[in-house]
Length: 162
Image 1 (cartoon, rainbow, N blue to C red):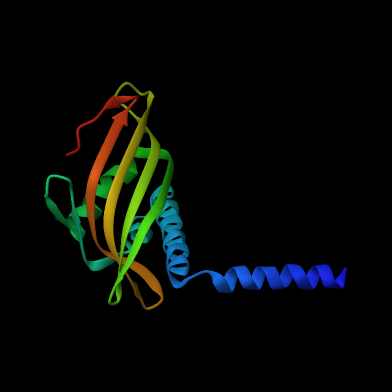
Image 2 (tube, rainbow, N blue to C red; image 1 turned 135 degrees about the vertical axis):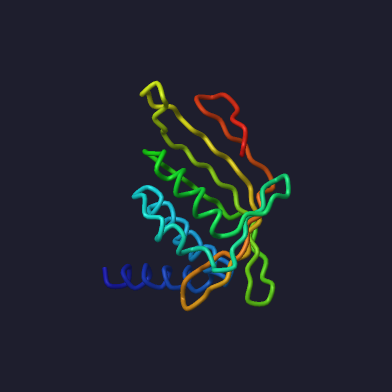
């Protein structure tokens, strides 16, 4: 029994130790994604914004750039209109550029929104972005996000992005 336990412990250590630095970065970013999603679910704008560096900018597929303050205002409004939120992000690619890690990430959000008709409607938001992340004082923060493609529907019907 002791031998089996020792082998399992060694297998765990080998697996953990063989994870490359980019795997550790990916796990760190996934933890940050989970924290951001929880903040959104709990309508905690401060927690939501904690992952955004002070110089954060977001660029939509048309090339329009939004500042951190504009993103905060937009997400505060969005946050207050949504409930039953799930938001999964998957890092597809990571490239190290000095202290910055550039990621290509797919996101899939599903949420409910109560409409003027007092009924719940289902929002589905799918996007692919290129993001620039940096670990600042032990926390992952994003400097920029560029949306490459976006598909948004409400109750299965395409919704325009504003």
